Amino acid sequence: MRHITYLPSARLDEEIIGKRFGVAAEKRVDDGGVTHWLYPARGIDVAVAGDGKTVIQYALPEDFTQLTEPLGRASE
Image 1 (cartoon, one colour):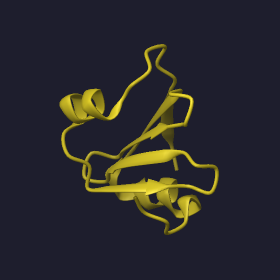
Image 2 (image 1 turned 30 degrees about the vertical axis):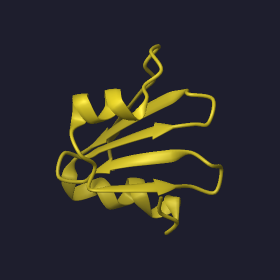
Image 3 (image 1 turned 30 degrees about the horizontal axis):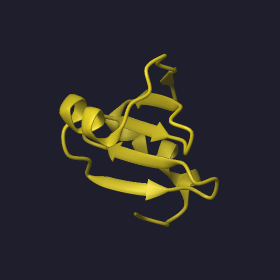
Image 4 (image 1 turned 60 degrees about the vertical axis):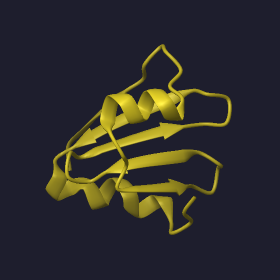
């Protein structure tokens, strides 16, 4: 799988994520407490840690499950 990881300098909150990417298909909280806004049709995972640091991962939509498998099944 190929993907791109982007580390924005801005801290994104739920409102900004919603305005930029729309309503997430799903939100999950991983074992480390990081919330992931998942957009499988677009191949985007927006991950926000408790301290506000954000990581955005882009993958081909057909490879998206490879990004989400490690997250487990916990949902918010």
